Image (cartoon, rainbow, N blue to C red):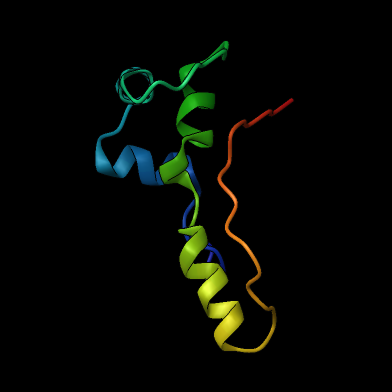
Length: 80
């Protein structure tokens, strides 16, 4: 475990019982289009593998490190 950023996403997925096939089914049910040659890539890039962006932005705003101006919604993830 890395003390600064926590465990790697794949490690979290393995500990919580998430597998690539299940994650793919969950994302497809939400209307997400997936093109990945491996289930591991799906787990590592799934939305739950990242910190909550709202919490990060709120913390940066509260610490005067940044100023909130708008809210963005991710629409695509490309890894390559």
